[in-house]
Image 1: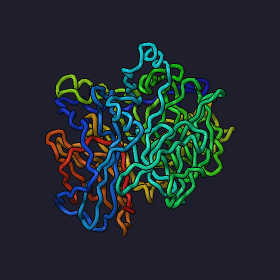
Image 2: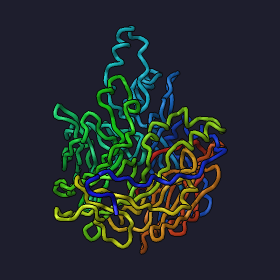
Image 3: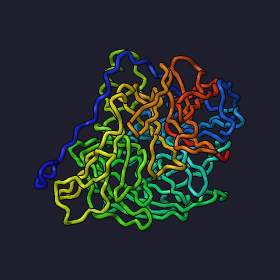
Image 4: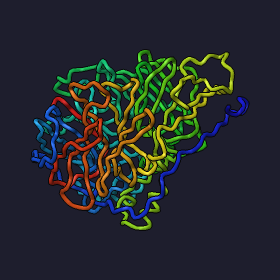
Length: 545
């Protein structure tokens, strides 16, 4: 039983903490600049990659961290480097290209950083006089088109994306940069996430925002299905499905992704805020703050009509970047996501912190970070006014999550989606599922990176029936976000393979593409490539190329 309804302040237990780490190894080489390899390179196959795996594993992430004497401050600031592992008949080739964004081109031409990024302001122009340089500090930085986060698809075309209003269309075979796309030219938004969702009909959904004299607004947007046959990027059929006013228009919430189920979209307004009055002359990282006394609010909209559910769903403050999956069951919306109790982690991934030498200071820094762990929230979709306060509205046999009606709405308490054995692997992030067949549907398995270091140092498979783990881990190896590829004759949810790019700081030119049997989580094969690959962000498997 929760607190009386007259007291709407509820508290829930904080995340458990992973064990303290010691003697962490130096990972500086994983965040060092590398050269691109635009011409495909043959790889050495160890083991066997299934012959049915045909296509390209595309990945994105930062790959250049300085221009001339000016250096980027934050890991998110590095210039986007795109990677392609092309797989056919059990053989693999590798290629990579830097995204020719305006940011990359201008920085290269000037041999210094001239476009502000998430955590780095532009280097002052030495040709400007002292007064011009002084007043430039009070200008709002222009949005970057350095799309380092992910590969996405709209209308059948491939793009690389970040969290501004700019994307770049990409040739998924050659990785050549095509035209720059500005969302604001098509619909009235200032930015969009790099984590869209796709429905079974082929439509794409995303989350954007806008700001005007009336306030700050979050927008759910939809792009209808397309064939990808356009000679140029065309998002003219994009539409705003729903508009949500910010709870605090001066300090809107930071967001990285959102929730999609069969019939609903959920925007999570969390306690990381951006102070818009301080943004002039500063980068985003400097105006972002974590406010743990705020509630987290779950805004629920009908996926087809855009109509917002009137019920206010809220929880204690939590921090989330990535959703795992969501589905509906018997009048409830089940949402699984990776969560933490400390939103300051965003600001902590500076180049200085990541390049610390092995020793006491590196251990101390890592141990100060919050632990990211999987949670389940359950929302009752039909809350009647006559429902009594202070009772759990959830009646599902397989979850301990609760939803208590209060004077102000419905307060949510999560279920932990793990057993304590997960803590020894440092929690988890970068979750992936069998998206093709189980997104927005009931599911059993998800895959992720374990975080026993500042970057993922293991691969995990979570079986939600019993919350049982399977683990791939080898000391000194750092795997990327795992991506599931279903087998063509799959009968079970986990019939397929899991792919990850594995790198090491211990030896140069020792990267490889790892292919695991998704069911047993054992290695089938690897494709060794004699290049250095920095630790990246997100990727996808493209069966068409």
